[in-house]
Every structure is written in structure tokens, then in C-alpha cells.
Amino acid sequence: MTPTSTIDDDAGAAPVNATAIAAARRNSILAWVLPVLTLSAAVAFWEFWVWYKAIPHFLIPAPSRIWETLLVEGPSLMRSAWFTVKLTFFSLGLAIVGGVVLGGLFALSRPIEMSLFPFAVILQVTPIVAIAPLILIYVHNTFAALLICAWLVAFFPILSNTVVGLRSTDHNLRDLFTLYRATPWQRLRKLLAPSALPYFMAALKIAGGLALIGAVVAEFVAGATGTNTGLASRIIESSFRNEIPKMFAALVLVSLLGVAIFLMTALASKLVLGRWHESEITRES
Amino acid sequence: MNEPLIRLDRVRKEFGRQILAVEDMTLTINRGDFISFLGPSGCGKSTALRMIAGLLPVTAGTITIAPIEGKVEQDLGFVFQEPTLMPWASVFDNVWLPLSLAGLSRNAARERVRTALHEVGLTKFETAYPRELSGGMKMRVSIARAMVTRPRILLMDEPFAALDEMTRSKLNNDVIRLASEHALTVIFVTHSVYEAVYLSNRIIVMAARPGRVVADLTVAEPWPRGEDFRMSDVFSAEARRISHILKGTLHDTDINH
Image (cartoon, rainbow over all chains, first blue to last red):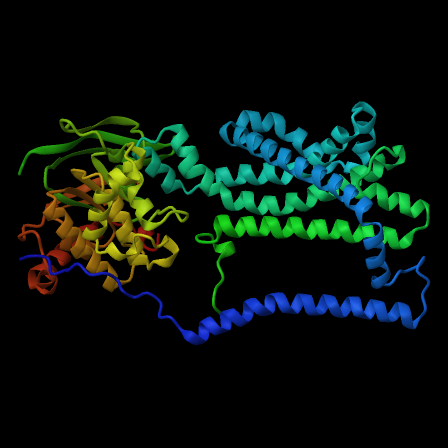
């Protein structure tokens, strides 16, 4: 008697469905069109309301006025925006390095985690506005002081998610790597790092926004010293001078920066996880 | 082929002080055996398998596997209860893993990975990702991965327990074919009497609390087997005989355990 099974491919790949593709395309267009439409409508209503109620621009400027201010003040605002961008990305970069390295150490050694985790938690739960003045006193270089503040805020999610990610590796896969006598380096590169990646990408989305918040808040605290040129100090400066349209213009730039960071981290997540992780897979309903 | 390959000598496994998972298991497995560990949950069959694989240390006793000359790569394939694939890697990369951990580049391993995939009928799915495959296909990738190092011994830990009946019987036939073509020695852990009878020429019946061997039975039917055996009276008779022995080992508390 011989086994009756034959070699054949499971050719049951999902049938390509034209209507499903059309629906998916429609959805992806709507995903852009709807937000743009609602935002435009909101801005138009704002413009109309300011005009209709004849609200003076030093109370609430119309969007057209903010746009004018952006054009006129453009070069100087852009310099400030560049300062904030640098601050945000530097601190985010340092948060990634610090969070991943420390997270790796924590995942490797429980004693290290137990000894250092309280520090991480204390730094995380103490509001940055409360620590920032102290840091500004002790660190004389303002950029470095601001960097530390923004880093403190952005660093914690990366740290905690990296630890969770490194610890959540499938147990059977760990056994498999043991069976094939993987070296510690192979285990890190081929098993732990990819397993932790979805957690890390989720943390990156949060940390990106937090780095910007940290940068802006720190600058607000430091603003009194008047030595900075970031967007936050432009907002403070404009408020002192009652230049409300300029405040709004700077605010618009901060928001745009935040949106840009969000889109970048979301795109990075899609690029890295798109093909395999549930969080980035679009399902047909 | 009565050449001893794996020998367990009074192997004992305790978890903590309270739980005796395997009590003094002594067993000789010969080259070419297709042997099943059959028993209820908690009888230590998976624990025994993991100890043989070297994934769990023994508390006492020894396990010896006859050495082989000149084999650098892993001589032992292991198939888990779940497919245990890396979701971030393609089917090719998943099967390549054992060879890549042994230092073989993608190019050097390509032919062997393709052969392994061909043997489980997944040639066209090299570039697919695990999530794009059905449960049965994932399990076949897992088998291809275990086979890619050309091991002498294949250990399978309830590999098809979560699959539907049709897929399961198809994969049973695939395993028989692979085992006979490659002259493998297989240890197959299962809680299904029918699966054990269909596949193996020897069945180790185990009981729980403490986990121990209660019977070492031979299924004398010719091997390899095919679907006609599944339909035969001999098959039903063997299944009845073994069910009866297995039932005798169960306490009331084991039901629905």
C-alpha cells in the first residue's frame, strides 16, 4: 500500500473581485476627500462668521488674515519653525536611541529593570512644566536644555513599548531558535527585533507627537529668557505685543508640523509593517 | 531496521516540587520507527517530546541520541502544535531560517528551500506571507522548515490538532509519504486514537498524574499506509483495542480536563 496523497498546490487564492477593488479604491479616495472637505468647510465658516459678526482681528482674525500674516512674516516665522523642527527631531532621535538601548537592557536583565524603572516612571509622571525651570537653571546652553525637556517627554513610550515588545516574542519561536542553536546576535536580529517592531512603531507615533509638545512646552517655560527663536517663543512674543494674527500664524505652523510628524510616523509604520502586521492590513468588510 | 536511535533511561521531569510531569520513562526508539505518544492532556507526552528535542532539561535520567558522522546542521526537526511561523517573513524566509541560522546564505540555501517547499506542495507560495495562507498550508510550511535541514528525526507535537478533519487526513498522508521517502524516525504526539493508529507502527499510551507510560503497543499493519487502511476493518479493530486501553487509564476527573 502506498500513500494516496499527491502533491498539489492549494490553489485557493482569493478570487480577484472587480467590485471589491472598485470599493477599495472609492474608500481610499474618500479617506482623502472627506477630511479635506470638512476642514475647508470649517475654515470657510470661520471666515464667514468673522466677516458676518465683524469681529475685530485682534480678537479673532479671519483665516484670510492669518494667511496674509503668514506670507508677510513668512521668512522670520520659517526660521523659528526650523528651530522647532530641529529641536523636535533631535529629541525624537535621542528618545529612540535612549528608549531602545535602555529597553533592550531592561528586557535582557530583570535586576537592571527593577533598579532603573522607578527613575523612568518618576521622570514620566512629573509634569514637564514642573521640571523644565530646573533644567533651564542647571543647563546653560538653552538648546541643550530644551532638548532635554523634549527628550524626557518623548522617551518614555519608546522605552516601555520596546520592553513589552521584546518580551512578547512567541514562546514556540523562541524554542525554535534554541533548537537551531541561534547565537544571541541572531536571536536579537531575526527574532526579538522583528517581534518588537509593531510595539516600537506604535510608540513612535506617540513619541513623535510628544516630542513636539515637549519642545513647545519647554520653550514656553524658557520663553521668559527671550534667547530662543522657536515657534513657541514667537507665540509668547506676539501675545505680549497683542499681535493676534501672528499668534495664529505661528500656531498654524505648529499644528502643521505636528500633522507632518504624524503622517511621517504613520507612513513609516505602514512601510515597515504593511505586509504582515494586523494593525496595518486593510480588511474588506 | 531494529537499530536503536533514541534511548530514554528513567527520564523524569518535575515542575516545581508539586508536579511530576513525567515519571521514570524508559524507552528505546529504533531507526525508522513511526512512534506515537498517545494520551490525555497532562500525561506528559509533550513534555517528553520537548526533553528529547533538548528544549527542556530532564530532572533525572538520561536521553541519548545515536550520534551521526559529519552532520553539521540540526539533525532533529520539530513541528509545534501551532505553525509557529515568523509573521514578518515570507514563506521562503521561514523555511530558510534553520539553514540561515547555520550560516547558509539565501543563495546557497535556495535549492534546498525550494525542494522542501516542493515536497509539501507549496512551490508557488514562496513569496507569500503566513497570514495569506490557510491553516493547513501554514502547517505545511512548518513541516517544510523542519525538513529543510534533512534531519534523521522528526518530532511533531500535536501538529494537526487545530485543523479540520479533511485537512488533517491529507496532512497525515503527507507525513507518511515524507517519513517513508526520507526514512525518517518520527515521534508524533497526539490525543487522537485514530491518528495514532493510522500513522504509527508503535504507540506509547500514556496516563496523567503522574505522567507515565502505561502501554507500548505495536500496530503490525504494513507501512507506509494509505486511505484504504483508514476504511479497513483492521483499522477499526486496532482503534477499538487502543481506545479500550486508553480508557482504562483515565480517572473520572480526566474527562473534560
